[in-house]
Amino acid sequence: MLERFEQIGREARDALARVQTVQQLEQYRLDYLSRKGLLMGILSEVGKLPPDQKKAGGQLANQIKNEITAAFEALRVQLESSKGPTGPIEDVTLPGKPVWCGKSHIITQTVDELVELFGRMGFDVVYGPEVENEWHNFIALNIPPEHPARDPLDNFYIDEKRLLRSQTSTIQIRVMETRKLPIRVVAPGRVYRPDTVDATHMYMFHQIEALVVDEGISMVDLKTSIDQFIHAFFGAGTVWRFRPSFFPFTEPSCEIDLLWSDRTGKQEWMEVGGCGMVDPNVFNAVGIDSEKYTGWAFGFGIERLAMRKYGITDIRLLFENDLRFLRQF
Image (cartoon, rainbow, N blue to C red; front, side, top):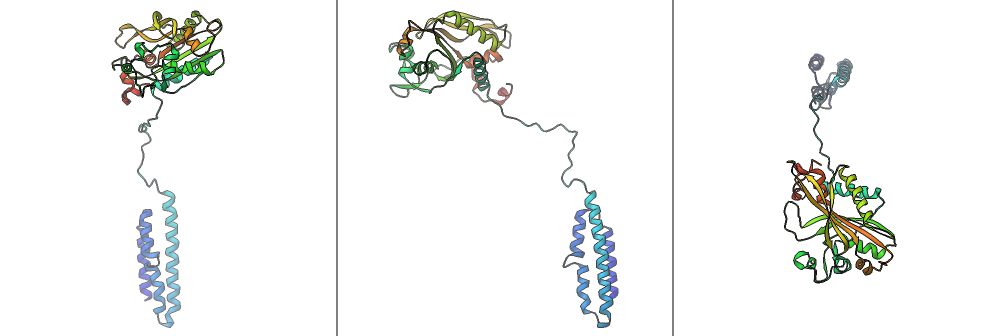
């Protein structure tokens, strides 16, 4: 029996000498040092020895166990201190994996830039409801019932008295009804018109309108403000013009055109908005003394401003949500 103990000890030492990895060491522990391993088994065999051999057998079994355990622990420390990465090796010289970060839509970027620009010019920002009544959308803006702009075919009516607003001028009426004079505000937002969709028209688009009301306001103030805005937004070399027009809520009225070049180099005038001096009938509708106060207003199509600034030739590109297009901005 003592010879068997020595044979198991030699086998355990030889097996430990062949261990080269942490995984092999764990398997060795299970085979030899666990509760059911061979070295623990020889300790249980001591009790089966004759009485005169028990002492020598116990000493031999403990000696073998202690030697193997000490060698096992030394090898474990050595392997764990020298082991490399357990996962796949990463080549740090390879290019990194791109991480796509979200950002605002080009229209949102343009709105934010406009609001910040007009804020520097001293304008407050105001908002209003997109579902409006006829008073704010038409009547207070000096648009009579027989005016073609009120035709049901040219508006998105919800019922006989309510519709999706066709212009952000409705916010100007709400401001003049509730704010004390003087007034200096801009109003961005979505508007809705059943236009035929093409390269420059959409049934839903965005506008930003400005309103100034005070004593002594003139057309000179209007032109100066638009000139400052256009050159700040598009650059000092931008060419623009006033073109006489008609709007029921302003008198006199003008269209605002920008000279722009598409990506082929072709130049043409693009209408981006309308403007004018506030009609006295609008002041009378909201209870402002038109003999004492004057004011001006303008409205720009935000999509057209973005198209002019970034050389976009088709408004539909802004709404198709094609990431190949949107990632450019």
